[in-house]
Image 1: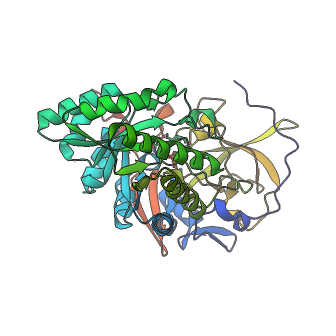
Image 2: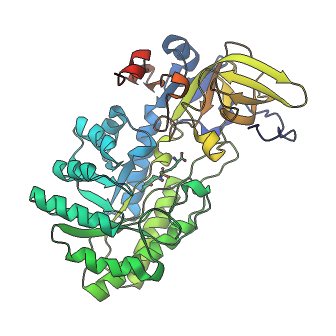
Image 3: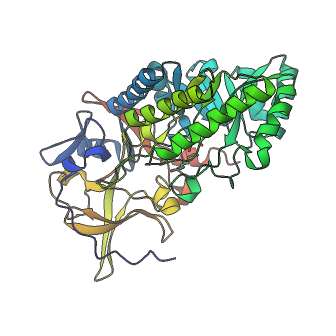
Length: 451
Ligand SMILES: Cc1ncc(COP(=O)(O)O)c(C=O)c1O
Ligand SMILES: N[C@@H](CCCC[NH3+])C(=O)O
């Protein structure tokens, strides 16, 4: 495989790192030409901890969690915000989420185990997945999770059986695909009809299933859920989804006499990966979603349910930065300039998988304009191993520390050991202090499971 031809129309960027606005974490600043986050010099941090390294601005994480809760609390007081842990999961982020009053969405037994390990209150945990194994369902029900989001009728049967065996009634939601097309990469669009997720609305299937679900003895249908996709900029699809879902709740009440208590409209709010991206704000998202649910409840004369949302990316993406060291520079005249770093698709698969864009800056030249167009590639045995394709960068030199911005979501959680690469450590920075919250993998870790 070769990369798409270099985009020679791309222009150098006269802006410095300090001008990258919403792509940067909250506390980012440039001091003496160095990128500093949480009061910690990232160049010194890279030298001390080694690279590749994931760094998170704790103030940024907490700020976004607070903004979500405040914004929804204002617009729709009977609401809750679940952190979608799939975006970035380790024990410390869950402790912070709990301190900030978040509830939690886990997908699968591994994420549930992490939540249990930090004592996250199980009644505030919702479990997701389109094919949770019977073992995972048993773990979740046994642990007392607040909600299992059921993806199919087959699964509701399984939940009811396991709950019966454990002598409990499990609260569940039904996940509905509301047929709303969100403008995002096709791999991360989930609310349209052709989706492996949830009960389809086609031929009124989901609606007809409600009756069956209500008849299962050991489940309580507490609400409905939808999630239309991820990295969505326009707020209109969220409003459409709210309309479809509130209409659905009203029909369920009218036909089956069941007034469910809760409505979960999922996550999906987009973030700025590049300086050109203009996502909607958390506050506008809350206004549109909360406002739409209120408006449609009035229209359908429905008692407003408790409203849940479950953002992942928009809580953690911009808080995170990946630091690398430049090892090789290869210039192919009239073709491309490759800058190779000591990580790549093993710590950030998103560029290869979704053609995602990222802004790289040289952390030890952060005050300088980015006058070169380069392709930041990794160290793996794949031509598609690219972190940032044809992006502006300062004049690179061997040994420079490159900071790739907005890598806080779906990089660490989708990381691999491809080519025997140990996964990077995770460091949280705050008030001038850096603390390792997930240590770097060792070669021994790589072989731990081998016999
Ligand atoms: C069911 C569900 N909820 C929440 C999320 C979080 O989405 P995002 O990270 O886009 O906010 C996802 C991921 O797309 C999801 O599949
Ligand atoms: N992993 C995707 C998002 C999928 C979200 C889960 N449904 C990403 O990196 O953008």
